[in-house]
Length: 392
Ligand SMILES: Cc1ncc(COP(=O)(O)O)c(C=O)c1O
Image 1 (cartoon, protein in one colour):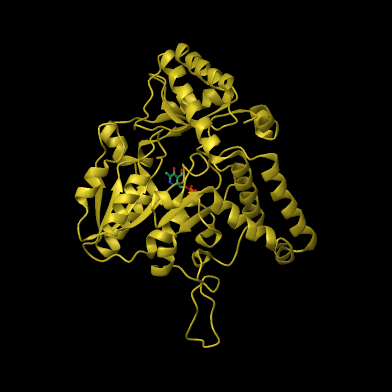
Image 2 (image 1 turned 135 degrees about the vertical axis):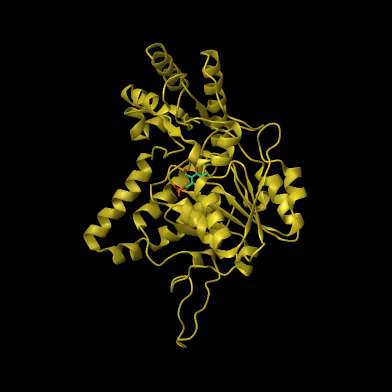
């Protein structure tokens, strides 16, 4: 990987030390150009006409995005963010009173609130699978918790609040062995890790464009397996997902995952996401994973050497690193870092309540590295924190 070249092709690298890639990564010049060109085309010839001219590239974007997770184009629905993607799958699973949803301790707030809503609306039950000693979902405990009322296994791959990588493939093997539907929130792992939906064994996978995939904001996608496409009726359906027939009492369900989409799109964003996926595929997801994981490891050891505690759990860890400056509010620390030209974010307990309660976590300062970050940037972040600690 030619990091210098990749940085030169990323306008934001000249402006900031960007360690908030799990917020939104910096887009490349290519992704920016794709979007600007399409917006200009829309302005020149009209929005519908521009979409028609770009039809081949729109179709290619589905193939590219599918390629990032080892899927095929017909298994992808393009939507506006990961929460939409996730809900489109979740709401399509018909739950009855007493049906059980099994989830992870690292579950993202939006997902957990949706489980609570399903509890209120349908009388579904929520089971939280305990974590093992290393902090990741305990696959044996999951296996033990499954019974004939278990309707869904729904877990977060990489949580919002740290470097943990949950054992998503092992969970998939358990789900398949029991014939239970498996929904994977891969919002933070897509574009960061090498993923293959067949190995993951999931029925649905939801993701966002703006994080590790380096796509535009306001983009996301849902993967639905062929089995899911055979069995699942979308809870939300329009005339794009289910074209209305001449017989006004009928519609035909689209055979592909685009049944989960609405008719309207931000085409510039969709095309930009396609370019981002092409760039990730050209670099190789394996090479991206290797570098991001290595930079994450390097940052953790630099922080430890400077006497900062880190809070990342699990046997396998990714490029998200959480820490804090003792006696300094993490929001204040983040503001001070911004003044030094360093982008970070704050992970609050309310975004992952179960894990935060279990570990009594305060607001944490979150650094998330991408392949275009350098060791010098990590050193600058650690010395920034040291300065904040010294002047606290
Ligand atoms: C684990 C996880 N899932 C889902 C989401 C939601 O993604 P989006 O904001 O694209 O809807 C996030 C966002 O931070 C997340 O960290």
